[in-house]
Amino acid sequence: MDNIESRLELVNVAEGMLDLYLDPLILAAGCCNCVRCRLDVKAIALNDFKAHYVVTERGEAMSRAMLAASQSVADITMAITKAALYVKGRPRHK
View 1 (cartoon, rainbow, N blue to C red):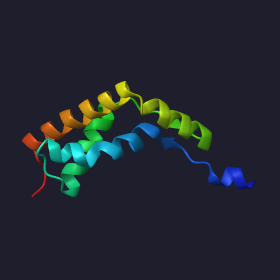
View 2 (cartoon, rainbow, N blue to C red; view 1 turned 180 degrees about the horizontal axis):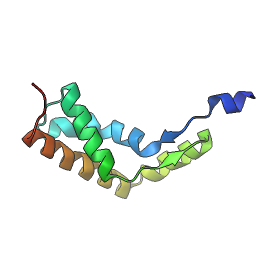
View 3 (spheres, helix red, strand yellow; view 1 turned 135 degrees about the horizontal axis):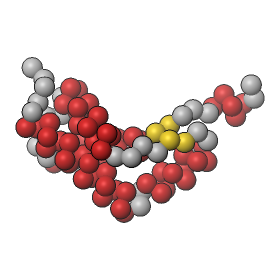
């Protein structure tokens, strides 16, 4: 295996972009930010957002740039906010 192949991995770029906005939007929605609630919000938002998988480092960079477009940011914001409000009304933590 050469050096490049050893660095390749399958990445959901949409999940990485969602992670950038997750904490501030959870707090803005007034949702609990405990581990359980945070993961519930993330799972619900990811299920509502189209996955975008890449393998190469170049592909990942290009996909991140595409997802950073204003419509993608708006879509991510909407998915997280919707999920945070849902979890806020139905928390599953103790």
